[in-house]
Length: 403
Image 1 (tube, one colour):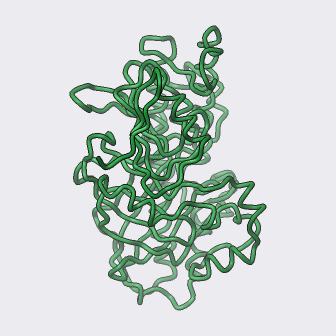
Image 2 (tube, rainbow, N blue to C red; image 1 turned 120 degrees about the vertical axis):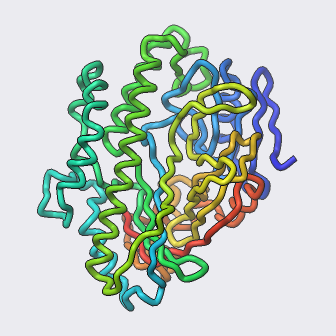
Image 3 (cartoon, rainbow, N blue to C red; image 1 turned 180 degrees about the vertical axis):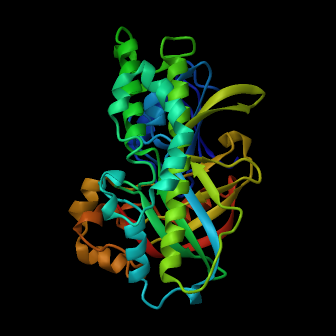
């Protein structure tokens, strides 16, 4: 057996790919609560980067029949990764990477940037954003027609922007010295608004039963209920937005790199663009079910995915092994080992400087919560899921842009 089994009284079992990786008691409690929901299909699958989240643990795969939990999908709907190998070699990069970092920072709105509201702040042509929004606009109008408050969100404005927190753009080098561009972001302000709206609706719909739930953030929609289909439509749209958002930023990164790297280059045609906070219909064990991956990546047999390490640690391009017991999934990263507040309490700017000495990046108090030591050991995480994926490429960061 390649996983650890946690039996849950009056609930479905929990299968955990966590050998050699610590799982705290709070996360175990959340897993137990989720496993007791009546619509869980067969078992929960838990990835080695598991840690406590809102309602459900981050790093879990939640298979359901006839119901969906909005807070399990979360508010960063469609958050995920994109990576592309270039034809560049490490030797083609400039001796000083500060100029490359600055070019990317000018090209990709990041932090709490308003995006298109201040076009002079960014080297960002409007045409690609307009084209991407045109493909999204009709679907968004259908959602807004039913939920008008969503019209007041940063939807068009945030398209093609990075955001804050653990979102990043990186330049990496693999084991053969090939240069990669990699980025992490999702559906931004509009996805957050959609997520919060439907979490509130689920809690309101269950107001008579919510006291019976172990956590109000496990409120759910049953198939056929008033908001079930609307949520499925809205979350699908937000996931499409997130995918297009990453594509726009990758195009911007390429333009930025070409402005400072003299050698002409192109991208590998097999770029990877994958969600790790999302829900979709899939077929497992002979049944069509809804699979919510809350901090997990699809790892169907032969499917490529991305497992990033922390800021300053290595990352991996992986190929799925199609492990049925995991619902064909793998981890979405290293996973936090402590809260952001605890990281800021425990570590200093000097610690951050030492931990990221090999990376051209911010080294200030604003990113201490992203210090590598606040995350689990990525090597231990990868060892725990060796039956879920195989490593295709190992990447090391040389430039990192944070919001």
